[in-house]
Amino acid sequence: MGAGTRRYMRLLVFFDLPVVTKAERRAYTVFRRFLINDGYDMIQFSVYGRILNGNDAEEKHMKRLIDNLPPDGSVRCLTVTEKQFASMRLLVGLPLFQEKAVKANQLLLF
Image (cartoon, rainbow, N blue to C red; front, side, top):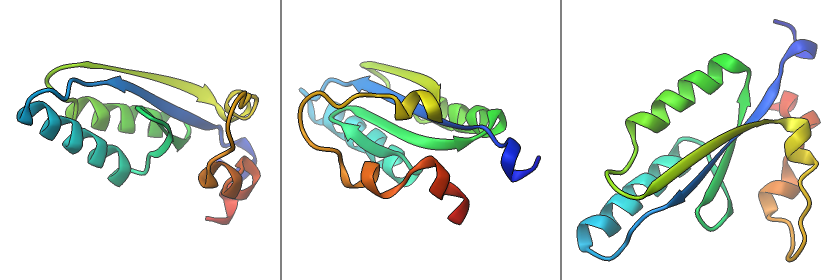
C-alpha cells in the first residue's frame, strides 16, 4: 500500500467510570494510563483519541482496548476518518497543543 493510498483514521474513546471507592479509582487510573501509554491524546476530559493507519491498525487497537477495559462504568469508541475529524468545530475554548502540532499531512514525517 503506497503512501498516497493510506487511509488515516481516528479512534475516539469516550468513557465514564465510577471513582467512589479506592478500587474504582485504581481501575480508572490504570485504564487512563493504558490509553496514554498506547498513544492516545486527551481531547477533553474522558475523551481520548489516536491516529490509525488503516483498518488493520483499527482492529489491532480495538482488540488492545477491549483487553484493557475496566470492570465497571461505560466505555464507548468511535472511528472516524481524518477528514471527518478535521471538520470538528471547537465552539468554546482553545485548541490543545496536540491539535495544533499534528495535522494529517504531517503524519508522513514521522
